[in-house]
Length: 90
Image 1 (tube, rainbow, N blue to C red):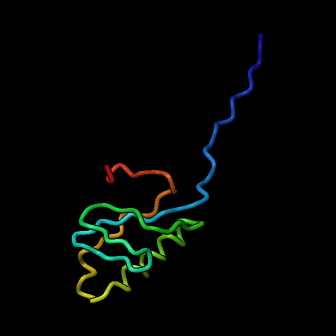
Image 2 (cartoon, rainbow, N blue to C red):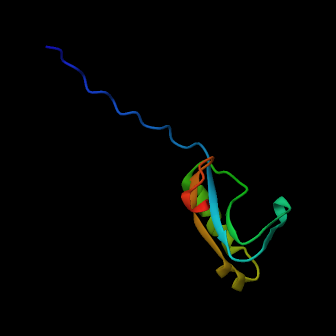
């Protein structure tokens, strides 16, 4: 009879931009973007070309929070493709 070729699996295109997501337990004023973020889940203001670069920037961002004892109030939740709203953000 007919010989059918297997259909190739459609794969989504890789993400071209990544954005960090954070959980804040206190108010944080981001001077660079002139904004204040309250307690809750927020996406970062910047996008990055790769997930690794985004995660490295998050590490540096959290390390630069002053005073150092305030760092415990901020948690990096991960880097996700730009335009994707993670389930925990709802």
